[in-house]
Image (tube, rainbow, N blue to C red):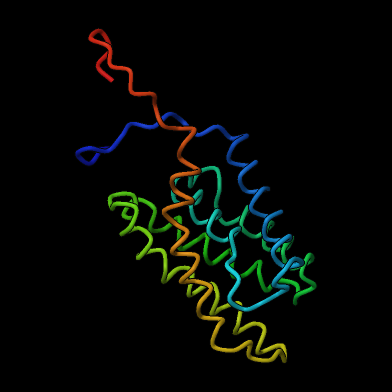
Length: 176
């Protein structure tokens, strides 16, 4: 792959770190849903952001199947309609994998802008499933969650790519 000018060469991602970050995001989601805010509509879905990140950066390891399993886990934890999060996360994973090559050519702030429609689509799909099953509209603050998640994208990118960054130690005998 041709790299952009100024882009840093990254080490391979450690599979244990990938799974640790996904499980940590799952636990944080569970804590946020039962914590101070309860299940407020505007609370960001950190697991969705982490799934999109790894689907973009490691599409062969994290994809639609992993998103489906984590979605079922969130459905069971929240007592939601079984398949509500699973379908939203599956569509989110598919869209992220399908655009991963194009997305990586942009800088992190531009990536956040391009990830926003993906997150909005997942939230709208989740809302649609909830409303078809007879749920109530959660209010207009519901549309704030994808915006907050897109704002988290640069922070998530820095945190999850940190273990892959090479230490800047130049060596005359090594070209990389």
